[in-house]
Image (cartoon, rainbow, N blue to C red; front, side, top):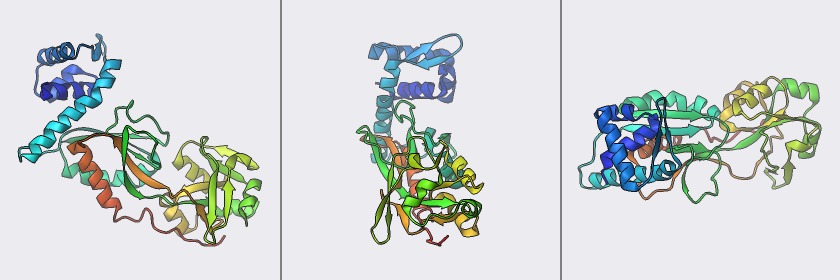
Length: 307
């Protein structure tokens, strides 16, 4: 099977335009269309739906796409093993990440990465809502939990400590919880799908954190909005330490129940489709992030300042 045609197919899926994909590879539109038609004849299925207005991926095309990417990666790995691989990392890398973390930590790094790999195109999807990595045709995603999905592989990026925070204004108005049981009398801010979590103290005492049992429960499905709402005195929220580090230092947020943390040992994970060969574009971006965050302070011990 011609890997150049497979590259054309993958690009056509990403661009949803066969002619544009062909131009990227130096092919005339007619040549690109002919190559896709021959590929469809070879596999015995229509991989792309065409109309006068747009191109879309068929169900068979969705099934075939990860295998096409795998065959391209296998060829690149084989050539690299023989010292004949391409020296430039190119193509489009589709990466998904939580918006808050990406805004604070990944966005500032992008100029450095883009200077290092000028032939690689980044397509970033930033959202705190989780979605299916395979169906979305993403090469790589950042998640704060490892999913029980046998089709995915994970590499740890950094620890992700979780603490409770509130603004001084809120605590002055509504009082400061002294025990986990006191949280039931307060306004709590959380995601709609947050399950009850266990809090544990440094002495080993455990308690249940359940926003749905609070006096008031504010549902916000965006991490940055939760943080801003907490800063404005709306209630108490769970926060990753990396998201509120500066606010804790300047006093605009303070820890609630400073002796307690969530017990599920959360971490940030890089998730990608399982494959025998990781493509060069995925590998260089993962290595770049892991190298940086291995030296960064995103998982530094959170202070236990009393409030």
